[in-house]
Amino acid sequence: MRLKRTSGRFWFGGALIGLVALALAGCTGVATREEREARRQLGTVKTSYRPDDRRPALPELTTNSPLGDFLTYAVLNRPQVEAAYYDWAASVENITVTRSLPDPQLTFQMDIQDVVASVMPGFVQQFPGPGKLRAQARAAAADSQAKYFAFESAVLQTAYAVRQSYYRLWFLDEKIQVDREMLRLLAELERIARAQNDVGQVTLQDVYRAQIEEDRLKTEVANLEDSRQPLLAQFRAALGLQRGQPDPPPPGRFEATPDLTPERVLDIAFARNPQLKAMEAEVRQAQASLDLAYKAKVPDFSLGLMADAKASPVLYRPLATVTLPVWRDKIAAEIAAAQAGERAAQARFSAAQIDLTVEFAGKSFDYREVNRNLDLLQNRLIPRARQSLEIARASYLSGKTEFFNLIDAERTLLEFRLSEIEARTQRELVLSDLSLLVAGVPPANAPLLPAKTAPVSTSSKTPSSP
Figure (spheres, rainbow, N blue to C red):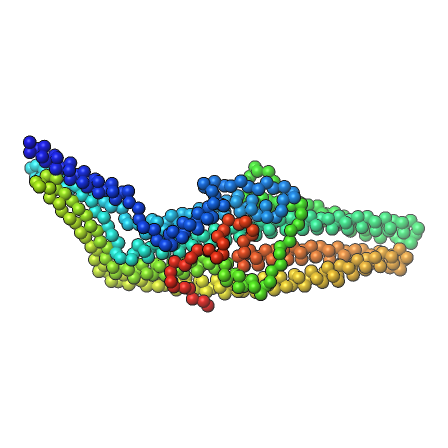
C-alpha cells in the first residue's frame, strides 16, 4: 500500500514538472520593435523578390526587350543577389534568437543509501541580467540592417553589370558598323586610284596604299567581332545564366542613361548609398555591443523547482542561483574592446564618407570631361574631318594632292568616329556609376525598400559626421 502511495506521489510530482516544462515549451517571446520592423521589411521585399521562397516568373527576353526587362531578369535570377537576400533573411531570424531566453532545463536528482531515499525531478530557467537580451537584440537588428544594405548593394552591382555589358555590346556593334562603312569607302578610293593609274596619273603605289589600309581595317573588324564573345560572356554572367543555358538575345535598341544633375548626386548619395548605410548600421551594432559590455557587471540569475516524490507530503525544493561578476579585469577588457570596436566603426564610417566624396568628385569630373569631348567630336571635329576628306578626294581626282593625304584624311575621320563611340560608351558607364554605385538610386521595379522606409535606427545614438 505504501509503495502505491509513493508511486502515486512520484507520478504526481513528475506530471507536475512535465506540465510546467510543456507549458514553457509552447511559449513564445515578446518581439522587440526592431524585430517587428525587420520582419515587416523582409515581408515587403519577399513579396516581390521570393514569394513562397520561389523565384517569380522571369520576363521573356527578346531582341526588342527594353533595358528594364534585362535588369529585372538579372536581379531576380543572379545568384549573388539571392545569396545576399538570404543572408539578410537569416540575420532577421537571428534577432529572435538573440532576444530569447535560454532554453529551460529539466533536472533529476535521487538520494540513494541502501534504498532510494528521494526522487526529485525538476526544472531550471536561466535569466540573463536586466537589459542584456535587449542589448543583444539591438546588436542583431543593426546587423540585419547591414545585411539588408548588402542585399541592396548586390542589386545595384547587378544592375551596373548589366548596363556595362549592355552598353559595351551595343557600342561594339557601332564600331563594327563604322569600320565596315570605312571599308566601303576604301574600296571606292582603291577604285579611284586604279582609274588614276590606268590613265597614267599615279603609280601603283597608291593602289597598294589603299589595299594596305583595307587589310588593316579588315583585321580590326575581325578582332572586334571576336571580342564579342567575352562581352557576351559578361552579359550572360550579369543576367545570372548558368552554363548550358542559351545565350541571351542581343539588345536590338539602345536606351541611354538619363542625365543627372551632379550637384544633387552627392546629397542623394549621403542619403541612400548602400555601402554608407551598411557602415552606419555597423556603428549602431558597435554601440549596442558596448551597451552589452557595460552590462557584464550585472549578474545573471536562474530559478528552478524540484519535487521530492517520495516524501509524504510531497516536498518541493525551490532553487535560485546568481552569477558573481567578480573578475574585474575581464569586465574591463570587455568594455575596452567594445569601446575600441565602436571607435573603429565610427572611423570606418567617416572614412567611407570621405571616400564617397572623393569618388563623387572623380566621377563628376569624368562626366564633365566626356561631355566636353563628345561636344567637340560631334559638333566640330567629325564634321570638319568629313569636309577635309571630301576636299582631299576632290584634290586627288584633280591631281592637286597625293594619295597619302587622301588616306590620312580617311584615317582621321575613322579615328574621330571611333573616339566618338568610345566617348558615348564612357558617358553611359559614368552615368551608370553615378546613379547606381555612387548615388545608390535603384532601377525601376527593383525589389527594394523605398528610401523613406529603409531600415530604421535601432539606437537613439547617431554616428558622428566627419
